Length: 471
Image 1 (cartoon, rainbow, N blue to C red):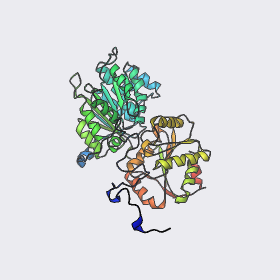
Image 2 (tube, one colour):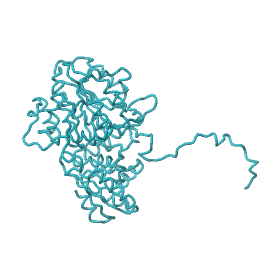
Image 3 (cartoon, rainbow, N blue to C red):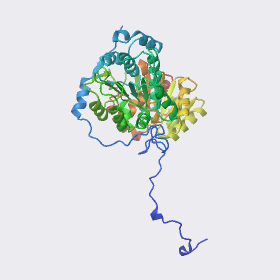
Image 4 (cartoon, one colour):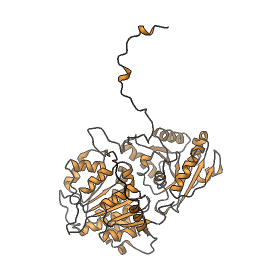
């Protein structure tokens, strides 16, 4: 069975000539790669392609501190109506039909400033009512600029709302569209993963408000299919997440293509909403917002008072059994996993245990992602296991429990994940599962996020698991 090395057939190639390949990693955090919703598609479809984040000089720390110091805390409002804030009757009725009978604090704080023509920086966690905070006054302002008249074919949009993900863009449009229709205005969605024809057709017919993601908006802008020169109100929602995904340069290009002044000669408005205010967001504020009014919801820097934060320190071998016991309750639960493979495996494990579950991650196409999310919203499943690609795209008001099967890498990820529960003033619970080796790491994350949470050693069968599952 042996032979002389000199007798071997020569190789068909020289190993030394091979191009070194980086080792493959089944990991949502792998470098220079995006989940399908964010990463650059094939050459024949330039949809939603984020650019590489280019190095830039962060905003001066003094300016960042100044923005934070200028923030006006949005306090609770008793007895105030949308009409009191300056919103007209048709829009107020549309808001009531959406379930918004009276304004949330962030809405009461920002709406008067938007109606007064000011630029606004709003800080508020998801679920604090940000969409109506910019959507209602945006529609009202467009009425001042000539809305409510007979629809003109081929007219250019006059308002633009940018969101980091398709799911969020769809969620925003579901809120803004009925508000706009109540006064005879039209919206359209511009996002990737779907054919161009329908979106281009809508633009050719004429629209008033664009709701979209930066990649597809930039693409249609560069193809000459989208004219933003008449946009007098621009909104960046979840601006920090757009920067995190590498959309800084597309956002800058898009905003530079909008109008500088309104037909009445006033400065065009920019509204920026973000859960966190870091140096990248501050740089956008400095570049595009003129003397903005800064508002935040009380307590947004810290844990929401409606959310109970828990950390369970477990043995690695017990982790899956602990998770199974945690998600066995009747309420809606989102479980965050680091990798797609783990998300799929956990969903299958829960199903095998008789727990109705499904998964959501970047390997699913848009229709599957929409379907799986609807399974949770409709109550056909109780548990959704998601990777971080879905952390910002899930907007369901009755999530009672968020479980972090894998601890996040930083405090921003923690805040975005935990923002899936405790929405609209409802109570929620966030449980993070960590092995002993990650205990110090999670303590640092909680400290940075200004969240107080007891760390408890736990294992299968512990009473605390049943208590948390029953919430």
